[in-house]
Image 1 (tube, rainbow, N blue to C red):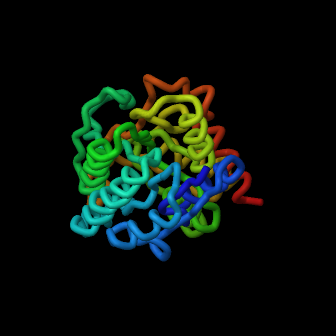
Image 2: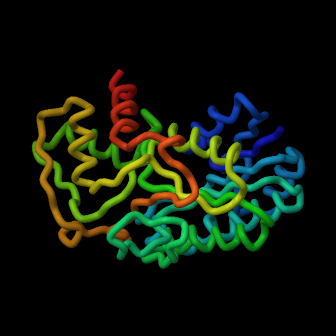
Length: 281
């Protein structure tokens, strides 16, 4: 079986390629090998490989960057997705699209499940939701997997965990938002979970994240605890006092009605502790 993974050099892409390499011939591609905005290049690459399975991870995921450059976000997350899905459909390849909880407005007080109605409030969320719609309009029976608050990547990590660890090197006090909630998700666990979902579940829409829910404040405290950093204090602040270019949904956590997540992916605290233990080695 041939599996094509787009966005293969990203922190999730690296884990997905590693996990699937034991059961599939994996073809990792990133922008250097296949710019998904280039329809002709996508056609040539995919027609040459002829994959049986396409896992589409390539995306513009910088939330503030998407707000600043909405046309670029749309070109990558919508048109790029359309290009990849179109070629996959021609090849009759199974298709997996990784989406995000940012497609919701965050007004719900509890985690979002698969039946909740999308209503994105930032350009990133809008572009990813439109990407979902492209996929469902082109691929007869796709997998769409929504996730949340990814961490991983070790030395290549540029997201929340890495930012907190860097701040802790120079600051005595770190401010973290206590009224925005999500489901922190370790890329290694997510990659393993994706493999389990496609092996045991029919095509469809699924929410997949490490178990549990926390605020950025709670997550920051755990990052410092598990990294054994006691030289700085964490100060709780409101999202209203913390300005970002793109609005964030106050509730970004997800849960699934269709997957017994306890059999697929561990609690976020356990995953974070494992990750930080490895990073500190």
